[in-house]
Length: 528
Image (cartoon, rainbow, N blue to C red; front, side, top):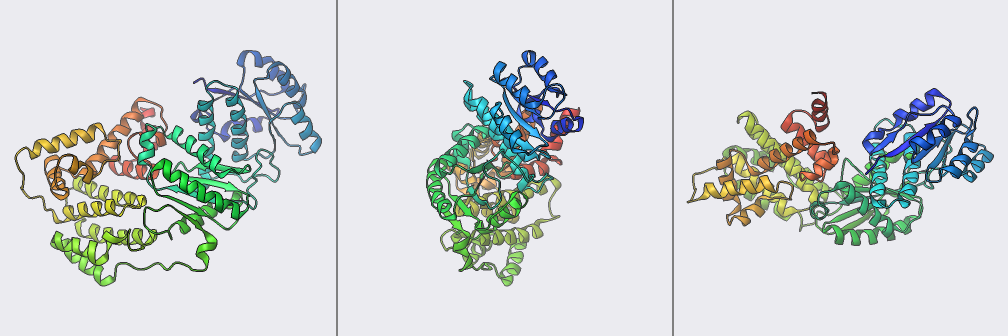
């Protein structure tokens, strides 16, 4: 697809440079033409350069912005213009809109203001183009990336007092957090095209919400989270949340959690509103049932967080890890502590996370420093896998990971091989090499090759020199490195393509395997 072309016109050098640097235009498939200094220069260049979007000031020498807009509207109707001006007088605003502007932004303009105005202009361009969905995807990606920065507390200017680029000004708005706990099925159905998946899920949520004045974006650092911000009444939002929960569960074949934060937010505290929503999310039951959580419903009955593992059990567990008594460890973890029943005995999401973390800590204490360096990476991979799988609300899968950790700690790799076991394991490894991007699990592969889980695990580790999870992670990271060397695909998409639906988890695994993060690794390649 040909890149969108953007032309900026402003007689102030520093304004032109600020707008030039405010957005990484190229990363969004946008070509920023050399900015023009006045309206006459714009008209001289229009015929040859044919920009898709024109961003102009009002007060410029020779030909002012309003007259320029009229000329552009008359001669180049396919170009979408909007105004950035230091004047907030209504007469200027009115004249600009009558002359064809689709937006009027008052200086100083923040990054989010500019992004919202671009999104609106790109949407208009898309409606006129035969490749409508491709253009809308580009617009969607810009919104996702820029709004996600707000949730990561990156440096960003606040919204100025006057903004006309969005009906939602974030003052008195409410935040809805939508989390799809397992993206494996839906990602596979979209061929691991993250942009298309994100765009179409947002469109689905938008249609289900039926709220005119709202903003919705996909958190690019948590690909399974969508954020909806609206000034609608709490009761209406709660009603829509129930509909979104039901329909998204059907589409994604995954548990869905929706959290409605009762507190209102503005642009400068959207991060705090998000953190509060995540805290509420932790109170949900650890089951595969989709839920809607409202702040008002949890406030009175403040759910108490239980300590599911006593200090005496922690001490006993440390002893058991060291002894390598796998049978006793399983009895302790799955029956006495109750991890095997965490999804059927009303455990909270937070309780599962905390209990798992304490179990993993004792496991790490007992194996640290006792193995070769390559084994340490293998063990670290197990820890990362445990942290990642707990998010899926799948107690059975979580117990599989714990079972694998028990096998590693006990070092129970015995020579129980039967005829052709080595060949079967090599076939399984070849299958992983080919289908690394699929949601592969120990139990799934063991079943495929007609072996018992723990026996398959021991044989795989013995034959391949590493456990299945580490082998799969290493394969995925190598494939990711290949994508980085051979193309310009963005890193979040690469994560999806190699089997990770959570970019943060991909980043952690990549850093552990390679020694640097994916962004640094790509930079080294480009500099070489």
